[in-house]
Image (cartoon, rainbow, N blue to C red; front, side):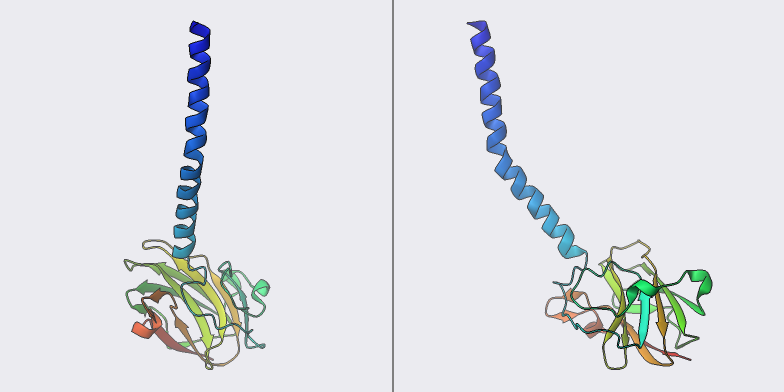
Length: 179
């Protein structure tokens, strides 16, 4: 009889464990979705799509949101850059982005000093995305972004959504010229 009770206890433990599986699955999926939505996976901001059409190439970010950044596999190390831009991201501004940079090889790094996630998207004059440092959390340093940019006017912008606006709509963008 004692052995029978142990077997019942083990079986009821298995049944309780099975009963927890759907709950654990729901929790795991919920956590995963929360993490993905906080990582700037593209669903939190509008997609511009397209490619760089030869106006820029580079590496950086994981490119998980919609849109092609035109040749991001062709990057270069920081030591080969003509200019290194170390931007500080705050709510809702970019700091330390110079008005003029020497090209064509421009290497971007970013540090988030704001209380919310931010990203750095390089865009040409027409608003086409050329490269991206995906959204990352406060106090973190980004992965680098290396772009070859032709002489011209560009801007960096944060396209993370806040309600029905992007951070760029709230002033988080900075123009620069490549010489």
